[in-house]
Image 1 (tube, one colour):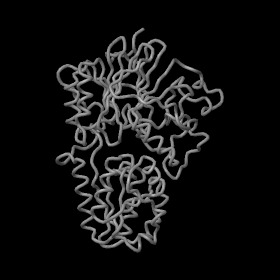
Image 2 (spheres, helix red, strand yellow):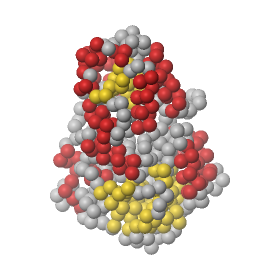
Image 3 (cartoon, one colour):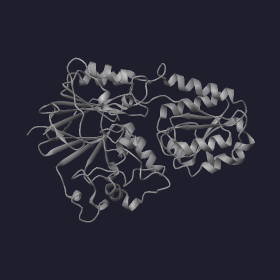
Image 4 (cartoon, rainbow, N blue to C red):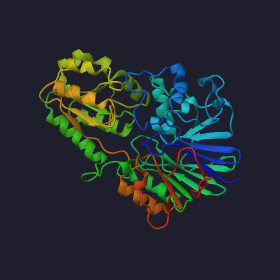
Length: 425
C-alpha cells in the first residue's frame, strides 16, 4: 500500500505541528502540538481552561484537530466517534515547546511517545513542578540519536538539531516509497549549528522534506542576526549599567543553556537571579545550580538590596502585574526581555504588559535572539538537502519559500492526504 502524508497542524500558522505518515495499518505522527489560532485565541486570559473538559472544549471550538483514533476516550464527549480505536500509531516529538508537544497528554492509552532523553526529562521536570501537560503524562520512550526504530513497515530515526531548548530533534521516516525528513524547529546561528547541518546531510536527496518556515512570514532582520553571545553580552552590560538598582527579566526557562549563562553572568556582576517559585522548582528538578526562589527572598529582600538581584516575575497570565507596583524601582531599573513571557507584540497580553511598564516608569529593552532559522538559512538548507518535494509548514507565509534547482514546493492543505511526491490523493 502506498505511503500517505497528512498535515493536521502547522498549515498557514506558526506552530501546532502535526505530520501524519501512514503505510498499511501503521501510522507515525510527528509532533502533536497545541493548535495556534489563526485569529483570536479563545483561551487567552482571563479565560481559564476547564481541566476536566480540556480536550472536549478545544475540539468544540476548533482548537484541536479531529484526528481519528488518537485521543483518550475519557477526555472526549460521550459517544464522540473520535474515541474509536484507529490504526497502530506511534508519536515522535521534536522538542519540548507546547506548539509541538502540548496535546500528547490527551493521547489514547497504549500509544507510545518517543523523544530525546533531554526532551522527556524537561517535560517530566515541568510536571514535577506542577506545570505538566494537560491530561497527564504519556507513555514516554527515550530514543537515541541516529538509531532507527522500526514501527511496522516504517522506520524512524531521530537527529539532534540546534534550537533554543535542549534535545530538539528532526526526524527521518523511511517508508517503502522513500524517505520523509522533518526539521522540527531548527536554527543555524545558535551554539551548535553543526547539529542542524547534520540533519541536512542525513536528509539529502529525500523524497519529501517538511521544514519549519517561521521566519518566512516575519519582517527581514535589520542587521546581522543576533547570536547567543550577543544576548549574554547585552545582559551583562545592562547589569553593569543598572548600578545598584533592581533589574527585571523575562526569559524562557526551558532554554536551559541561556538560563545557566545568565546565572553565571549575574553572579559575575554580584547579583542573584530570583525566579518565581514554580520556575525555581522546575530548574532545581533539572539540577540547575545557583537557583534562588522568590519565597526565599521576598519583597522585603528585594527592597533591602535591589542591586543584589535580577527578578523574573511570573507573568504567564498577567495576574501578577499589579504586584510590579510594589517593587523597588530605581533610576537604573530596566526590564530585559530575552524571549520570555509575554512572548511578543503578536500576543494579546503584550499591549497590557507594555502599558503597565510605561506607567511604572520601567524601560523595556529586548535583548533576545531568534530561535528559528532565518529565511536565508532556510533557503540554503533546502538547497543542500535537494529533496524531490519540499513542504514549508509552521509559518504564516509558506509561499515565500522559493526552492531553486529542482525541488517541487507543496503548499499543503490541512488534513488532505498526499503521496511522498506531493500529489493529492
